Image (tube, rainbow over the protein chains, first blue to last red):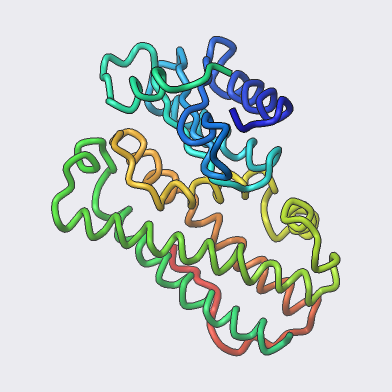
Length: 101
Length: 164
């Protein structure tokens, strides 16, 4: 995994602050692969927030806070509300390939 | 430097007016719903693209070019300062409402460039774009005020958009 321990702490703490203490975060995509360089930070988040509006609001604050803490960079977030029955293919890919932070 | 600022202000004046028009067009087209975003009519698809495209251009022109040039012209910070330091200075000068909020809008702009499969996300991006158009325009207006009051720049071309 190509994130520093400080970056991991920042991402996890910020996710819990924005999406609730029960939020879980996975890193997936190219940053999981130690042999590659650079690339987007792809994050998959599961949250108990139960409306699209609350989830959107959390995403907005989460990304803004990460930009403030880590500097503006390519960070992509996929959010799964646990109460939402929809199963987008990206959810399964992220969980299967991802590293839980 | 003054010529560069003049040119950038002229460009932002045009973009601001176009963005204000696009915002008005989307706002006047009816409520944004997940259905409209999930399967947009050709007219809606054009309208949404117009708003996002103009929003991104305005953000880039303002945040990426005009505001850094303004700080440089005002001698507010060393040119090589980190983006976050520049942003905090812009907040102190009252040009951006808050550095944290500006970063949210930068993140929003970057998300506009993606095509998200989740229509809830696409709806969120559109709604946030629409609600934050006045914030972008207010930043542009504050930048003009700073340039004329603090730098004595005569901004002959372009008027601040008050059309929203």
